Length: 122
Image (cartoon, rainbow, N blue to C red; front, side):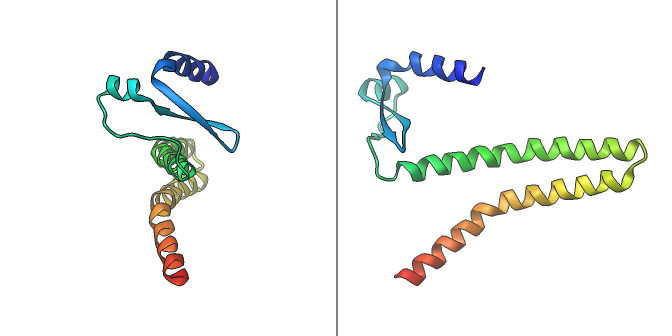
């Protein structure tokens, strides 16, 4: 289903986008007509840092998914508490909370590591 949606979006945007290959993956960006249609002035062309932007966008998607996933696990833990298995239920809730915090703090930790490496290399 996701592939069908992806193909639909790519086909509908044909006159508005260009693409290049980065490690065998098509990376799409707006051409002049697409920038005019979306009323944006930011020009993006083939970038050497495209992988950086793609990884950053993947990170934002993962961060956005952390809360719903944690909530599902917490609710599952609450069901275990209600049916009498409170030890497993509270354990699930605790691990969901800790996992959510780690996912949210990970970008900050990565920034600190990048700054430390930049300082060591400079």
